[in-house]
Length: 398
Image 1 (tube, one colour):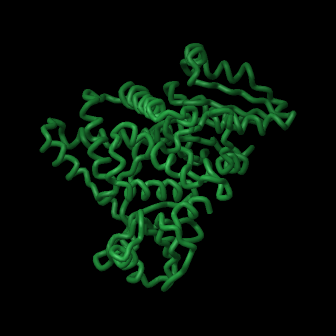
Image 2: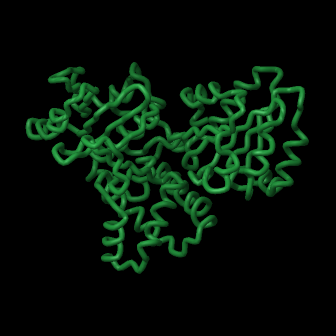
């Protein structure tokens, strides 16, 4: 509930309903404070409409709960106490990574009669190593993102441009809607960043220098939307006086990615039709948090618009790459799902000076997949030479 308004996460709720009562562990992951707990509570309200449902909810975000249920035996005993074999049992464990080796207990309960399990976590390592071995083939992962613009605004609402300007500045972390004042919003978003550093990085990993970690984070966003490799990150960080080894820098970048502060987008060879693992770009999971921490959003507006489009594509279920080849200038995004491939270019405004540059990569692609050019120009949707010219805000609300 934010300022009296509960934002229903309809897409994710439908995904959960699709997997309801299936013998799969539903693993809900995403950056801290993106709405995972609220999503589970919304889902619980749906389940409660079935009188045969028995809800077992373990909130390890809650101080008292985490104090009382802090190891495997206590978790197991709590579940056992509330389990009702004649009912449909729905087990929810929020921030499950707070209990060491949690997977042992979760794995032991999944095959119990009338048991449906949902767990959340704020780290992509939730399914790595031993965890993955124990529950491989028994889980489905649902990644929850901060609010996309279409969850905050509908196409027939008034003042859409004003709402988009706010979204562009403050992002989609749901809790920021509690505040109207910019200082309060940025204070809140900085608090989330500090919480992630403390709870998802420092307490779980051998990070000796927080300032160096933040410097790497800042470097990535000073180069938002630019091609990066571990080698050039290392070279620049070292040139700026850091004593970190290349191995440590790689570790720090991966930690930022694992806790969902950044997302890595690989390049895709449009001619060879293969993913280029060694070439990538990084984008923040939420532009508001990035703006709050570094306050330099004005000089890279085009890249932040790319970021908004990227998050929307991920939300819509596409796998996203950067398009490249020797003969084609880079395409901002290649988006793929089981049904289609899209090519997208993003620019703040189309002008006589840049229109040829933006459409040139499209003209060199010979397949018939949709080619979309997004900008903030106030224009009606039009199609020229197989290229769709669309207003970015209208596309977000499509």
